[in-house]
Amino acid sequence: MTRGDRPSRVSQRELEPRVSPGRRALLLAAVLTGVLLLAIQLWLLTIALDLFLGGHGGEIWGLAAISGLIFAGGLGTFVLLRRNSAPRR
Amino acid sequence: MSVEPPERAPVAGWREQFPYRLDADDLVSRREFLRISVVSSGALFGGTLLLGVLGSLTDQRRGGTAVEVARRSELQPNEVRYFNFPGPEDHAVLINLPDQGPVAYSQKCTHLSCAVYYQTEPVPRLFCPCHEGVFSVADGSPTAGPPQRRLPRIRLEQRGDVLYAVEEVP
Image (cartoon, rainbow over the protein chains, first blue to last red):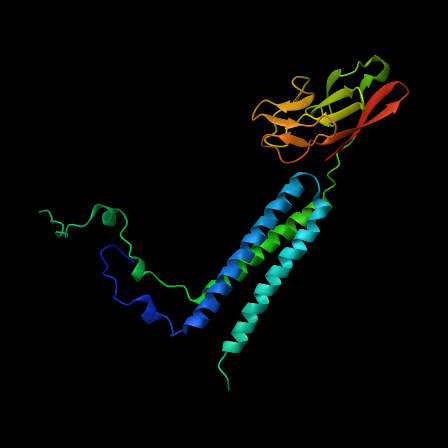
């Protein structure tokens, strides 16, 4: 947005599709779980770096496997949601 | 002839400094957020995997030519010898512990690479004066201060009466 523009008076509620309260809570829980899993991956990366600098590089594989599982789960969810929301013929 | 700038309505000071409105900002859809999260997750996984590969490929034991450190019979209990190993610029310390015999460690603190020194007071310990890191003399593990990793140990080998440093083990 450039300086001086007037924002349109459209509220966030109007922009979002209508979502039932129960579904909203479910979506919020899913988003928070995703953020938590990302934080865990970041934590695993710091441990891996610590092990690498400490000369215990061979012990990193377990951490990489856990991180890979989280990534695979996220990718699977993404693909599944794309497939489910694709227009049906 | 100069052109006068158009008059502007007075605005609050902070609005002048930060002319953005939250309600006019682009909203990220949930699908877009998920896509960004998956890409971030992949990047974090890639970083961890890369460290694993690098850690396995690089041999982190450092050795080379065995270096004569001391004569065993000449070492007194709690005597300390400073020497260079594995390279001429790498500082190391040998301590003759009364109960454990001679042990040797790299002098490079695992916090920020200052040199650690042997102290007998208040207790026998390896002390880093930069940030007051303390390491155990028995196994080089950190016992106080910021260091989180143990000091690399230097494997000693006795040939006759002479102690040689043969390998640095992280």
